[in-house]
Amino acid sequence: MRAFWGIAAFLAATPAWAVDCRDLSFKGEVYTVCEVDAQAEDLRLFLNDPETGKPLGNFTSIENLVEEEGQVLAFSMNAGMYHTDRRPVGHYAEKGEVLAPVITNAGPGNFGLLPNGVFCIREGRADVFETLRYVDEAPDCTYASQSGPMLVIDGALHPRFLPDSDSTYIRNGVGTTAGGETAFFAISKSPVTFHQFGTMFRDGLKLPQALYFDGSISRLYAPDLNRFDIGFPMGPMVGVVAPPPE
Image (cartoon, rainbow, N blue to C red; front, side, top):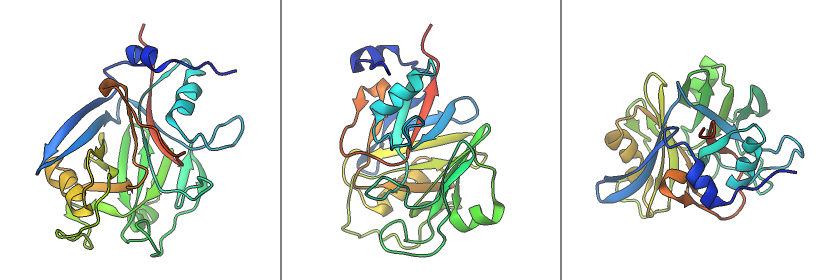
C-alpha cells in the first residue's frame, strides 16, 4: 500500500534546488513562473497509474507514485487538454510509448485553433514544437503532450490573438529556450487574454516558442511557494522528480 505524506512534512522535505518558482509582474499582471533546467532535472509527464491503468488525476497521486521510487515531487502542473474520461485530446507519449496520435487538422475549441503544438521532453532537453514541424522533424521524445493553441511561434504571437479580446481566464502553459536547455512553466494569478499570456512568454521571458496548456482547470503544485492547487481531476500532468534530502 502506498504511503501518504502529509503536506506539511512534504513541504519541509522538498529539495529547494530542483525547481526555481517565483512570481513575475508583467504589464500589470502577475504570473507564477517555474523554471526547470532540462539538462539537469528529471522532468516527466504523468497520465495513468502504472498498476491500475487508471488516470492519476491529481498531484497527490503523483506524490505517492514517485515516493515508491524513493523520490519526491518537486513541481507539477496540468499539461494538456483532455476528454471527460481524462484521455488526452491530442498526441501523448510517455516513456517512449505513444498513447495517442498527433492531430493535425483544425477543430473546435482552443486545441483546434491552429497552429497548435507539442511539448517534447528528450534526453537533456525540453522543446515546444509547432505541430506540423513536430510531424516533419519527428523528434525522439521520451515524453510528449500536444495542446493548443501555440502562444509564441518562432518569436511571433499566434496570429489569431487579439489585443482587445474580452475572453479572459486563469491560463497556464510552457515555453522553452532555443537550445532546449530550460523550460518555463507559467500560470496567471488572475484572468488574462491569450494576447496577454503570449506576450508575457515572448517579451517577459524572452522565449521563442511557447504553448498553451489550459484555461479552465489550470493548476500548480509548487512546494517552494507553499502552493498545492486542488480541483477537478486532471488528465496529462508534467512534473519534476527529485531525490529526497539527505
